[in-house]
Length: 128
Image 1 (cartoon, rainbow, N blue to C red):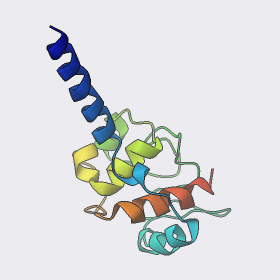
Image 2: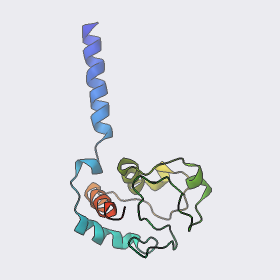
Image 3: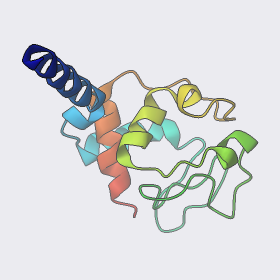
């Protein structure tokens, strides 16, 4: 019985730590995030005068409910997602948007570089 308890505890710990791997394990750099955001800027804006364009403006996205800015027409999939954009959820979305929100209209296939995701998250924090 004691062995089973130990194995279960070890398995749960491994699962817990592996689910927090990825961008959270990297230290982000805002300058690098700004450079990486240039790819996003063809559809999204941040900053004082940010507006929706082909995609929603991203000021204050961290902590915001998905599909909640009034100046953008979101897909039904995004409206129904119920997501609140935590850094972990945003990192997962940046990695694989169509896995996180199946049916999203975002024409972007994801970022495979966890360091770049961490950099983008640090940069996005500047626009709360």
